[in-house]
Length: 272
Image (cartoon, rainbow, N blue to C red; front, side, top):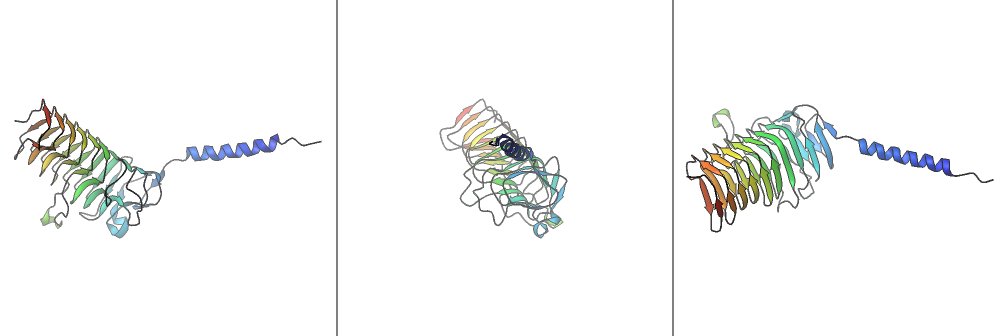
């Protein structure tokens, strides 16, 4: 009489399914203090963070690998005043600067809000959505290579009150600075010391820039449509050839719409 193997096989299958189900239902790791995020995956803030508890009391979240997603979950990361960086690559970072996804909160009062710059640029897209990047003394957010940036606010970055003990900025003072092949849409940049939105190339649409110390929008080439710029040093500066369609640039002190070079397709812009 031979014993039938089916029950044992069923147990093995059940155990295997249990492991798979457990893995599938595992949620993002909850972050409740400034720290290094050591591996790829999803993280979510569980409270407001203050950089006084971070590395050397100045930096907050350090990314040690590619493909990290951070949901700020409506919370705020606060710096210790014109020092360090809110979210940056860790010193031991060995990746290519790829696959970062940061969304849903506020970063305020650092030297640099978000710094994802890597030597030689980034080969992959990073994403920034529904963020408020505010009052960081050097710049708001800078990412090498291509990026998708949507529905975010960049305000009063690259502005420093020397009387309040803030050192002069050491970088460009932009609200946002991203590389070529980027998509930048639905954002607001106001009161930044340098450019409001600086995009090396790509699609720039539906943004508003006002009161910035340099160009409201500085675009290295691509498609620039339905943006509004007022009260900046320059409204919209764009390298040609580019498609520049339906933008409004009024009341900028040193020029409203400045195509750089030849070959731009300028259609239905309001830029006296």
